[in-house]
Length: 293
Image (cartoon, rainbow, N blue to C red; front, side, top):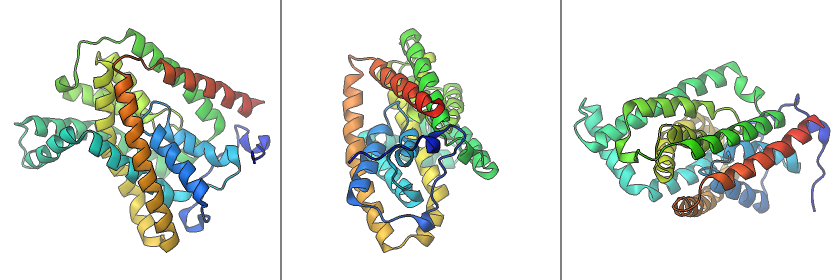
């Protein structure tokens, strides 16, 4: 059965405020599968996973999934990106120990340093948004519609005009900072963290596959920071049912994200980001029509 869409709920002045995990509803298996697939497929594609998850309860009539499920879904996608880029992750992991000793004398240490630099802006901006309450104020259909449309067109422009002279192995601290600042913009729902960092990388002249690779590596410390920020409170209050649901979502998100990553990275050998741009533009127009109708 297709749920009715209540237009007053979707009006742009109404916020889609997340349900607190203490009052989180009992999730059906259908809801768990749907959330896991949405998170897993959209997390690394440049179409905004957070935007889709925010829209899910508003457009379907389902209750918000709560923080337990959100954290679990991100843990699943985190495991997927670590496995997919294991060689880079292993290099950065061992390089972190060199970095902690104040040494940047290996490729791994330099990669770890660049990832750290790229992560700092999003942590600072994320804390500001959370402490000021602006995070919830931006959770509206109108905001997601505009960001889907605007940043989708921006991605198309960057992809079509960006150079191809740079590769991921030539990543610099300056470029890491620039991409990190752009990544912070993705805290606006609908922007897409992977989409905006890929856009920044293409503007800087990185090839499509290398731009995506850097964007995916940047997601690892960002997802970890987000999970730590929410995870402590979730662990203290989650019950057995919530833990079971979280485990199911984490597992399915892992599988979906791994498949999505593999397909996207293979397609980038011969296909541009235009299909994702078309999807973003169409969805953005539909959401704006719904919001302002």
